[in-house]
Image 1 (tube, rainbow, N blue to C red):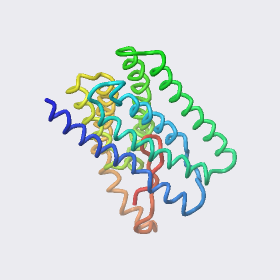
Image 2: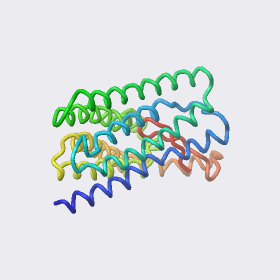
Image 3: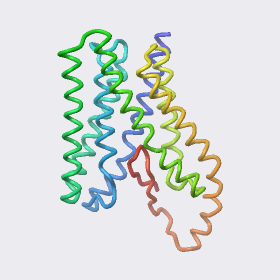
Length: 243
């Protein structure tokens, strides 16, 4: 049981890392153009909060045998922080002020959770408090593509829902769902079970509607669309370009 728990944790780390690195294409574009264009920085700030809370929950003095939760979410927090800093450098003044205010609020929330858990709570009370906080924001993070799924159904097109991102949402959610079940930890299993279900729904929608996109591609090509043109996609609330 312990070996299986470790294996699913490692696989979850690998798939989650892919998700965290996916927006690098977006930020390459931002750096190149020296503009955030119409991209929103809010998803990156909120994902950073989720990573901070989950990494904190996985520490040994909060919950037992969840170090792999801390490793990937610690790495995720660092990656998201880099995204936020880049966004703050290139965003317009008004947008920069808004994102900075949210960023300060996120750090305040995390500092409050960490301080209360260390100074006022002990044992199961500490674990439950941190677990509930991490679960809430994990569910919010996984739920963010719901608007994109609605768009797919409405337009009958998967143009804005890339297959591999949907696949890795499913794999990441499934891996940590099983990891949480094996570790008998509902604070890991529940939000990732939710992510697993949403990832499965995205894949189902993809296989239902992707043929329509394939049929329309030749028409688009005849209309003068260049090979290799970038398309905007959205994952976890963040825009990502796929070639």
